[in-house]
Amino acid sequence: MKVFVVLAVVLTALYTSEAAIKCIQGKDGTAAATDCTNTEEKKCSGPKFVEYTGLVSTDTIEYKCGPCADGTEETCVSCDGDSCNKPAETGADFSCKDWELKTEKWVVKTSDTTCHRLKDTKIQCNKPGAKADKDTKLADSRCGPCEADAKKNELCADCEGDKCNSDKSSAGSIFTVFVPLVAALYILA
Image 1 (tube, helix red, strand yellow):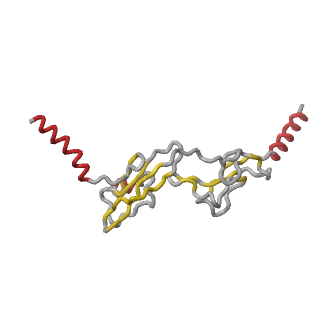
Image 2 (cartoon, helix red, strand yellow):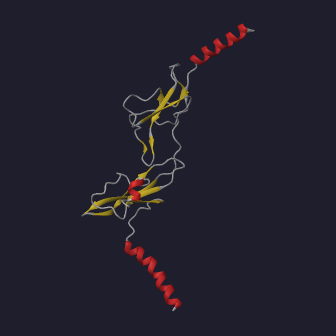
Image 3 (cartoon, helix red, strand yellow):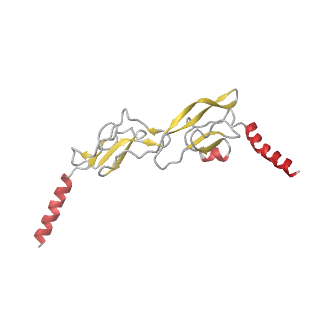
């Protein structure tokens, strides 16, 4: 009986050490996972997805067996085990309005930025806040929420929805509040 147990352990060890893991391989990540040629390989890798930006680099980073190359941490992600490098499930793209500083005032541009997100990520945009001035440093993209400190200090404002960060002038906002108020007062008088 001991011989069978030892034999089973040895065969399991041999089979496990020779069994290759499977990784998604190729440029776009659409192929099914296939066995890695190096049976000692335990990692898979592929392009990194950054919220609101999308895949960082599909030109230089491919889905493959093995870890990311040294120095590619910003564009590549490694993982352990079978088929672990499958592409992240994404949600529909959306747009946010672009902003720029003109004559010491933040103004909305005519252009939009296309934003990329994961499946369960909220659609969010940001724009300069009420206290933003010429010295305010904002993120390069209007996609996604504000940084916590910038939001708290009213240097940045965020919102939910496609192109929700468009320029809504304060005059228009005041008009939409006061017209119904005046109408209500007129009716009551």
